[in-house]
Each structure stands twice: as C-alpha cells, then as structure tokens.
Length: 619
Image (cartoon, rainbow, N blue to C red):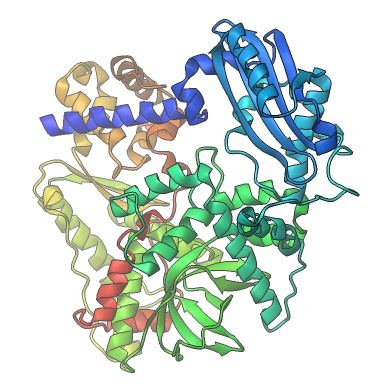
C-alpha cells in the first residue's frame, strides 16, 4: 500500500475535508466573501450620518431612500427603491468607502433628475423599507437579488409588527406598468390566484382540473427558477453534469435536469428552489399547494413496468423499489402508445395520495417475449444490489426484510466460522468464501422445508437441478497476502486488504506507531470511500484504550479533528450513520424467477436501461 499515488490521494482527501469545513464557516453571499471590508462596513450599529428620501414620495407612492453611516473605511451607503402603490421593494444597492463629497453629489444629482432629496426620520425609512419587503412577500412579488446585503444598515425589526397601511389601495396592489413590462410582470402577479387554489382529488384519481392546476403550479416554479440569483448555481450544476455550463442538446436531458435542479438540488443555504419558492410565497399560498410543492422533493426516478391504465393515469410497478404507483400526467399523453407490459423511464412525484409525472418520459415497448422481460428484470435486480439507497426508497417493507436477511446471513457466517471475521491470503479467503456459500446451499436447512438443504428443496420444488453459486473476488484481493473477510449484521460481507496488519496496529501500538507503513494503512483505511466504519468500530469496541492512543497519535500527526470514534466517522464516513443493509431482498417471486432464467444480455432496452442509470447511483 505504500505508494506515492496513495499518499497523494490521502493528502487530497484531507484537503477536501478541510475545504468542506471552510465552506460551512464562510457561507456568506458571494459579494461579501469577495469584499470583506464591505462586510465590516455594513453594520447598523455604525453612526448614522444621513437619511434621505425624495420629497414627493407620499404623493407619488414611490420612495427612494438613502442611508449613510460612518464606518472605519469611510461612509457606507444603502439605497432602497420602494413602490408603495404596487410591488413593494423594487431595488436595493449600495457602496462603501465614500466621502462627504460623494454624499453631496448624490443630493445634487437627485435634485437635477427629479424632486429633491430631503432629510428623513430613520424610523420612517425603516417602516417604508421593511414594509416594502413584507408587501412584496404578501403578494408574491420578486424581491431584489441582493437586498438582504444592503439591509444590514437598517436595524432588524419584528416582522409581525410591520405597518402596511402606507401600501397599495384598499389593501391591494395598485399595478401601474408600461406595455414592455406587462408580460413579465403579469406572470408573477397571477401567482397568488394559482397558489391559493384548493386541489381536489377523488378515490379513483386526480380530476383534469386538478391536473391542470398542478401543471400551472409547476410552470410557476420553472419561471421562479429562472430568476437571476439562481443563474450562477445553474451554470455550475450544468458544468458538473454535462461538462459545460450550457443547455444540453437533448431536450429530454434538459427537461430532467431542470426538474432535478428545481426539486432536488441543494443551494448554498441548504434549501431547494422549490423550498425557496414556498417560503417566498408563503403568505399567498394555500395549505394544499404548500404541501404539494414540498412533497415534490420526494422524487422517484426509476424504470417502471406498466401494468395497466386507470382513467387518464397508469398503474405502474417500480422495478427498483418494487412498489406500485397510480401515476397521472399533468398534460395529455394521448400521443403516446403505451400498452400494459411496456416499460418507462420516468420521474414521478407525490400528489394528493397519487403520483404525477415530473420531467420527461421515455417509453420502451415490450416485444412480448419472456426473454426480453427476463433481461430487463435481471438488469433491475443487479442495479438494486449496487444501489440499495434507490432500492429501499419509499418501501419500508423491503428495507426491513433486507435487514432481516443480513442478520440471518451474519448468524450463518458466525455459525460456520465461529467468528465474524476470517483472515488469510487472497486464495485462502476465496476458498473459505466458496465454502461458506456451499454450506448455505448444501448443508444449511431450508427455512421453508426445515428438513432439507436449500439445494435439495429447490430441486424438489422446481424439478430442475440447482445451480451452484460460484463466488469470485477482485484481482487485487485475490493476489493479496493479507485479506480479512468481515461480516457485519447490517452491511454484510466485506473484504479488506492489509486487515491483519490494521488489527495488529491496535493490538500492539508500541511496535507499529511511527512507521510509514502503519500510517499508510491507518490513514488509507480512514480516508477510503470504499471502506466503511466497521473496522474502526470493531477496534474501538475491543481495544478502547489502544484505539484512543492510536487515533490521538494521528490526530497530532495528521491534524485530524478528533480521536473519538463518532467524531472521526462523522468527518470521514458520514454515510455510516445511516447505513443500509448490504443484502437487498427481492419481494416479487415472479420477478426473481424470471431474472434467474435470463440469458446473456442482448437488446437495446437493456443497454439503454444501463445508460439511463449510469449516473444515478448518487440519487
């Protein structure tokens, strides 16, 4: 293991951990990260120098407010443009490092272009600015991108006590817009009418009126996602996904990317765009709509087996998590020839006790043969084993039965070997591994018959010869002189190179600490993405004093955050706190039977199945 490349990987891993910590500590808007002096200057506790407002603000119901405070870097300015008649806070900007001359110039320029700027009581300015924010939020109007930055020159107020009597006419917005602004403005003005809707659902599905409303709500979400403040995030996400910050050529890829970006991508503040949409329009949104949009975060993206039609919807089985769904389109699907037995690639989201399609839908016709269906089922089962997080999503029964399967597997392992870990060379471990599976097939009693081995019970039940399971190991494991075969009651079997030497470090720290090879092994284990928390938790449980001593040594040598087991695992192996079972139980016996009978994989459907899920392991 002592190679230069491995050292470089370890160093890179440590840097990445430190980078993530730094990102959390400095989760500020881009402008303030780039301008640390501005961050210091924008503070409402700095002395107030001047507060100005245009003289005719009350007659024209359009206020421009300038607030100047004195910071260590000079005068700092925040300016707010507030439309009291219509949309509330319309614009916000500012500057810092200004002088008294700059302040006088702003006054004179204001007089040249319109009504003069006059002194304004700070309490009135605060009422107008915070009132403009509350008014915009109440009626669902877009607030300026960086208004929260410049708001730092105003003392925070209790939102529940904000006076809105200065705004609108008869308690509603008075909209005065020119023809050029009308199209873009009208869309957001109509949001409250859509978002206040009550969504009806029947016992047999979703009515057309409800589906049309859901389509309008989704359109509003898409429009909201195109606001300027999301541009940078979208370009970065596009570059990660497609290699360049531009829309992909494939329309299906673009539609699915947008759907993922809106419903699932976490922004810097940890929220999704859908979550921000709900927060932005919370005062003009019905409970039905709020619950619907928040529920859309639970996206099910999978390969589906069409079982039949139900009104305008489809009865479908998810081949990855094995759950069945009633799914409706928000737009007509009459152009599609979908028959029972066909397969779909689709994204679906919950809606009033049913599901609706979200994103693009790809249809694959079934050719009518068992071979075709068997090949698809086998690909689905293989994918389940590799990506259990998707297999268990939205199916608690499958998850619990899989936990039970792993626990039984663990008990069988311990019964067979007398321990939950076995040591040896790669060749020896392969022999023992094969022996364990032969034991499960030819010696262990079948749980159903309880008096015959599994293989015999299978032959009697099916009339066909039992196919012996032949196990394999990866070449690096097979060629190693030091391999550990571990069995965990949750994650199941794992094979670790250099495991005996890893254990020896904690058994005999005096003998091994300070050696380069020891550092390579311990740090290699802790920084590896493919090694779970299991070996470390075993050492911490068996040898608590020695574990603390070894990890304290590397805490000092390698700048680890802690020597405590939970802290270390939270830093390097956070997924271990939500560990999924290492065995995936197949609930559908017919699906399992057909998958076992699958011939060599052929056909475009299987190939496209794999391509579709090529990047989905992270979902």
